[in-house]
Image 1 (cartoon, rainbow, N blue to C red):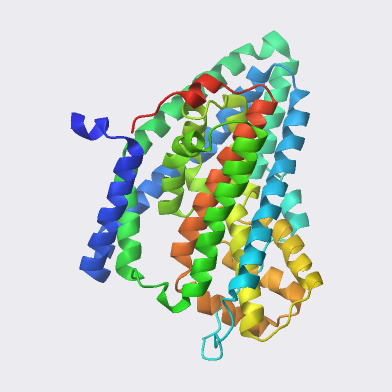
Image 2: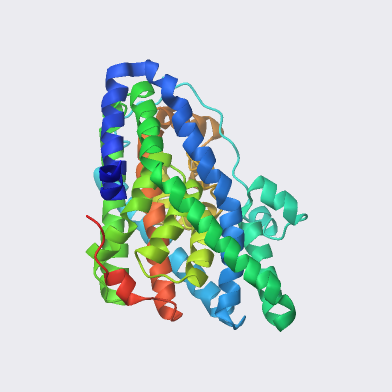
Length: 414
C-alpha cells in the first residue's frame, strides 16, 4: 500500500488509463459491468464542486482585503480568456483550410441526429443573477454561484469585525473541502481506469479511422494551441516562466480532464494543482478557475471551427474570408455558453454553421456523422480547456501579485 502512494498521481492515472484501454479492447461490451466505478468517481467529484467553489471563493475574497481588486482581476481574466479562445479558433480554421478534412466526404447516407439548441448568450448572461441562490446550488449553476459568492465575500469585508465569525467559518470550510478533494484525488486512477475501459470497450479504439483527416486536424490544433499560446506566448514570452514546469504542474488536472471529458468535473483537481503545484494563491484560483470552467473553451472553440469548415467542404459550400470571420466571431461568443460537460460542443455546432447558411437538415447530418467518434476528441479538447484555465490563472495571479514563484519552481514528485 505504501508503494502505491509513493508513485506520483499522474503516473497512477496514466497507468490506469493504459490498462483501461487494454481491458476495454479485450473485454468489449462486457466492460459495462464496471461502468459503475467510473460513475461513482464522477459523482464523488460532482459532490464537492459546488461547495468547493462557493466556500473557496468567499474565503478568497475575504483574504483579498480590498474589494476594489475584484474589478481589475475580473477585467484581466475575461480579456485573456477571450484572447486565447480567439487564437484557438484561428488555429482551427487555418488547419481546416489547409488539411481540407471535408473534401471527398459523403454525408448523404448519414442518418440525421437531433440537434439541441444552444442557450442564447443573453439568456446565459441573465442567469448569472439567480432567482433563488439555493436553486442555483441545487442545479450546479456555476456562474450564479460565483456571483452570489462574490456578494457574500464583499459584504463580509464591508461589515468588518461583525462578519469575522462567518469569515473564519468560510476559511475553515475551504480547508475542509480541499482536504476532501485530496481524498477523492487518491481514487482518481480507479475512476479513470473504469471510464477509459468503458470507452474502449463500447466505442472501440478504431473509432477515429473513418475520419482520420478531421481527427488529425483536431489533434494537431490542440497540441499547437497548448504549445504556442500557453507554452510560448503566455508562459515564456509574457510571464518569463518555464513552459515545462507549468505543464508538469498542470498534468494531473489535464489527465483527469482527458478521462472525464468535463471541465466542471475536473475543477476540484484543477484548484488543487493551481495552489499546490503552480503557486496560485486561493483568491485567484477560487475565482479564475471556476469562471474558466464555465466560459473558457479553447479546445471546444477550435473543434467547432474545424467541424464547421469540414461541413462546408463536405457539402460543397465555398467559404469566403467574411465567412471565416463569421465562424471565428460566432464560435468565440457561443463557446461562452458551453456547458462544462461531455459532448456539450455538439450542441453549438448548429448555431455556428447557421452563420454560413447551412440548413437544419445539413446540420443534423453533420452531428450524426461525428457523434460516433466525438468522445475521444472531446477528451482531448477538454484537456486543452483545463490547461488553458490553469495558464490564464497563472497569468492573472502574477499580475495581481497573488503568485508564489517558489511553489511554481519547486520540484514535483516524478
